[in-house]
Image 1 (cartoon, chains in turn red, brown):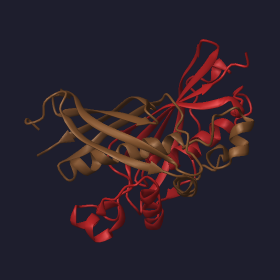
Image 2 (tube, chains in turn purple, orange):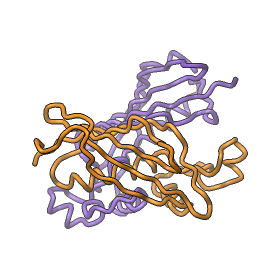
Image 3 (cartoon, one colour):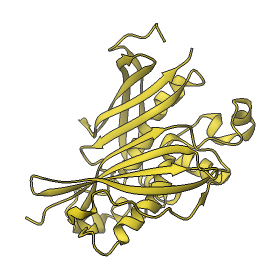
Image 4 (cartoon, helix red, strand yellow):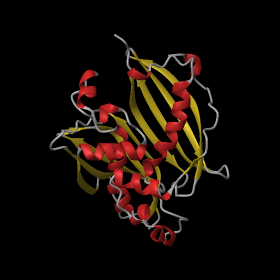
Length: 146
Length: 135
């Protein structure tokens, strides 16, 4: 893996408009049953403008950032050997339907460990006003070729 | 929340994952890697079977905590390590068990530690949820 990737900041992703039905669909898929995830009235009563996305929904936005990383020609990343090692989300607020979200991915670390390469990518996700919503941090492990 | 103590068990629950769950998550998340729905592809890359998406396991594992917390607080951070694959049998699926206990109380942040297992093996490591509780 290209060590010079460390510190690279990728351009902002195309804004992603969070749809109400997408939130509901994702909520069903992760077995989230709270009315906040499904019922706009319940969400409004709790102070949100629309249905609230489950905590890991940010992965959908992170994916757009990771796609830029994986498409870069000089990374030395072989996608067929990549395994998702760790994932973390750090929240300023929950994602809600109606949010228009942009992700900026930064490669924060490249390490070699026991024949494998580990890349840590931090994806900062902001809303249309530029306010931070959530940061998604992924550790991808590229298995050695033995 | 002062009535919590470190080590206290908060909640435990079971979810059965089937191939239907995996296809549904593929569509909802956009992760259409065929190792999550095709036995032949999973076998061709040396996997023990069709696997659940790690992010599906992560996504469902936090739900008991979210439900337990309700409107009493907010989520600050959630992180996991993917330590073992969750193999989803084509017929019976697999039962994923989640249990949550209080891991630490640091000022206004409570750390809740999750134990997530399938087929009697833990599948997520260092699975920690940090919440700020206000009542």
